[in-house]
Length: 180
Ligand code: PRP
Image (cartoon, rainbow, N blue to C red; front, side):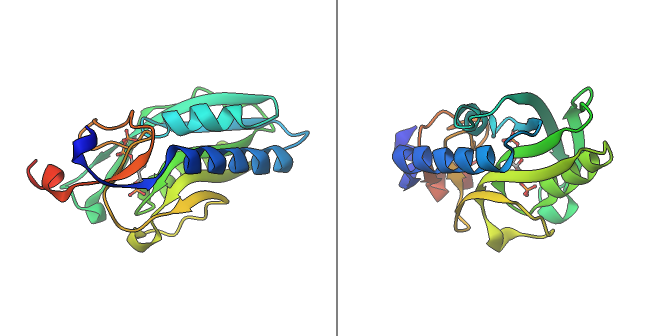
């Protein structure tokens, strides 16, 4: 697996410190409030596991999964909900936990969908942000790192379901995805 990585973009230590910082910010912002973290599977599972333990507040956890269909280009990407949450308790302050904000289509769709459930508030926490790829405007209150337009894997992020368990975030060698 490691031989497929061109270079390490974010080390385990850099990620650990950033997750701690995000957890502290969220803990300060939601003190005394009812906080619901919604994890978008699968990529965000690792981030969620670390982030929730960096939050020093009582929280609830829910999980959603979306599917993207289309001909492979972002402009035609259609999003459908594969796994939904049952119910949102009244007065929930939602933070959507995402691994990467890329074109913005997924979070734009999910945000709109969850807003229909009338939460007390709704914010987005994304570990990575690739602003150069944005096609739809999405406002994320909590952002870990801005990353360049490169194929990143690890710490939850995959290529063809592989590399999610790398403890760091690395750039995939182009020959790996070009040959697939
Ligand atoms: C990835 C990522 C985000 C989405 C971002 O999910 O986890 O959910 O794409 O892309 P966008 O901003 O262009 O919509 P993916 O569909 O690869 O599923 P996964 O989390 O199961 O890997």
